[in-house]
Amino acid sequence: MASLNEYLLVSGLLFAIGLAGVVLRRNIIVVFMCLELMLNAANLTLIAFSRFNTLDGLPNYNGLMLVFFVITVAAAEVAVGLAIIVALYRTRQTIHTDELTTLKG
Amino acid sequence: MPSYLFWFFAIITLIGGISVIAMRNPVSSAMSVVVSFVGLAGLFVGLSSFFAAIIQILVYTGAIMVLFLFIIMLLDLKTETKRAPSIAAIAAGLSLVIAFTIQLVGVITHTPNKQAPPLDQAALTAAAENFPADSGIASALTAGTLPDTKLIGHTLFTDYNFPLQILGLLLLVSTIGVVVLSNKSSEKENH
Picture (cartoon, each protein chain N blue to C red):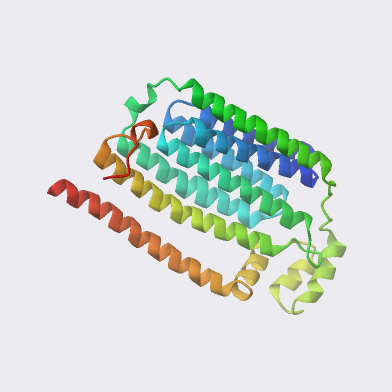
């Protein structure tokens, strides 16, 4: 079985890829997808730590609870975020972040 | 899980992630996210958290990415793909990634590596002592299997009962918020 550091390396690389996407992409929907990638990288770290630090011989289920909550909050966040993007598109006719420079509606 | 399966799923995850930011078409990006999440679910199975893997497939690739695809098709973004990416943004993104990766490798090479404690018959039977003898969790543990979903349910409804109810409230608030947001914008158009 792979060691803890290998899991942490993969998760860190996935987080870095997500971060790069947030910085260099200009399409707001793709930026949002990259945020999801970063959340999932954090989930991988949590699950790896929960498996490698056993509690009474079982994986530490407190870490998996956090993963469960992160996934649920991410689902709620995606619903609200996409509704905001649709509202934004209706008023501005663009989802290109370079053209979205003012907060006024 | 043997190590080569780990690297197989890790490479699927990372290639999916890279193609999310490399693809020009948002639909291809969404498909790459799906590939990346499927690889991630494979990694979760390797960490013997089967419930998280199934939830990853059902919630992320099944629900969230379909929602993304739905919005992409609703907004009809064909004209948005024909744009040259700015060099400053690419330089900023790449330098961020390189700095982050160097830092990551530096930290990982200097921390003690850890092997996973075994989840074999002896360890699981010992763990069954902490549960009532006639419970489903204890009988599955003494049989040598890890009842992942049952243990998550057990933790969720004992130690994390109050946060679970807060989470229900959060989902209710976000549902109402989405309805309010989409109503407001349609009202504006009517005026």
